[in-house]
Image 1 (spheres, rainbow, N blue to C red):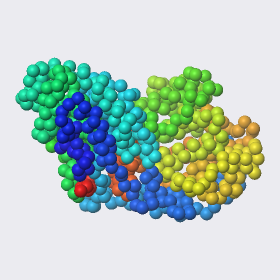
Image 2: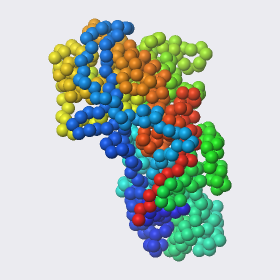
Image 3: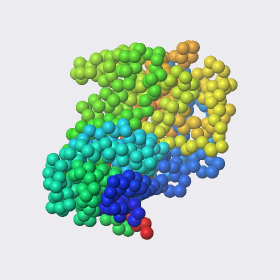
Image 4: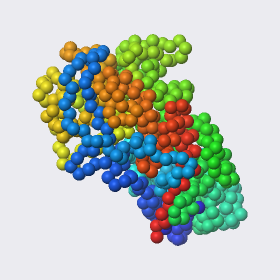
Length: 618
């Protein structure tokens, strides 16, 4: 199926233009089609009116409606802690009825339930996907750094979001330039494979095999008869003007510039109402979702034979693709984008080899737990060991090598818990204020681990950083004391900050370099206790960050939140708790018992087989 951006939301083949074949056809037609096609990528529904795309939280005029507002509660006496007067907070707004976790829990995902379906869409290949596709089709080495960077989505915080990533003029020009660079070598290879093109380019018996071969590789589906005819006409016209290698290169450039190459579709039959994905769309979704590569020969054969119709069929290919280098690379990229690591370029107070070890630890830890141990989200969040280099001992303190696990070191009991206490995550730049460090650490818990994004501040708010530090608590106030004073003096601001800043206070036992400390340098005790409120089965009191991580790591909301974010990264769209509840639930229910990498298989079983709702644009 070819598609046109000018009719019914589909995209058109560059070769399908009515412009006469000639030297200018690629630039004039290619750029216009790409930019027009960008408008087809679709804007996803954010959900019910008033629901934010990122956190499913309702922002009502003049109020702050929060998805659960944790407060420190009464501090508990523990290691590094002392009892103080509880923070007096303003009245907490009742839990938002659109809370994402509650919506997922209450969703009816039985076989007899009427599903809530996503819309059909067209989305651009990511830079990685585009490079991998071109390399697989042409056998060429492609420099992906020449493409403008994919944008970070404000909804998912990943660079894979289709709503964010359009084809703008810069990217269209980059596609054009790279096509020009790649075409000569590609044409030489094509002429070697199809020698008749040197003298018989106008003969369909010669041109059609070449066009269908390269078209199927680049478009990830067979060309239809009309497309073959149009590309043959382009080849014939160019061969009358230029040498065979230039003519063949022109056709390859046209295919590279075609929206059929640059976009992925989830359109099905493109008829109004409920539609099922085509087998080739299913094959694309599975392959790009798992490994960022085009469908291989086995997937293409399965699509041709319509052997991707059942979850078991799709799981077979997904499991196979998980063994590929691309799958591991994609998971690593997910982790790199998921994990908020500090700017280690500013860690100038530490030896260079320690900083290097800090930077490599998160990925090494993830690879060992996920790929070598088949670990779960809980393992990532609650492990009391590290595969980091022994050079980290100036930060970690005692690192006891594990004789049963080469490369693994046990850390001091009660001081560390998984990735949230890794030095690279805890690191704060030297110019960060204490309040900034606390806020950033708290938002990691609120946003990444609980998927409860705070509502944005009022548009007329003018933040006053001095309010966090120059408070009535005094210049030597601890972070806890400063927050108490800030909350008392700024009740309207505290209504929002109480939803994440106390979580950051739980990490005050770690300095800005991630080192564990019993007391502040001025001798004051460190308060790390508090409670998680309105967070499903993670709700409860904690004495420190380790206990907080344990609450979330052993909870369903933590598993669902992590799985949801993996799904958003892999699918390139926000998973709305109303529309995608059953997808989130299926992923979350997999997390406790299966390896993190099993999430890719589950997603392939569900999403590649799910119907969509298609609206025909007249």
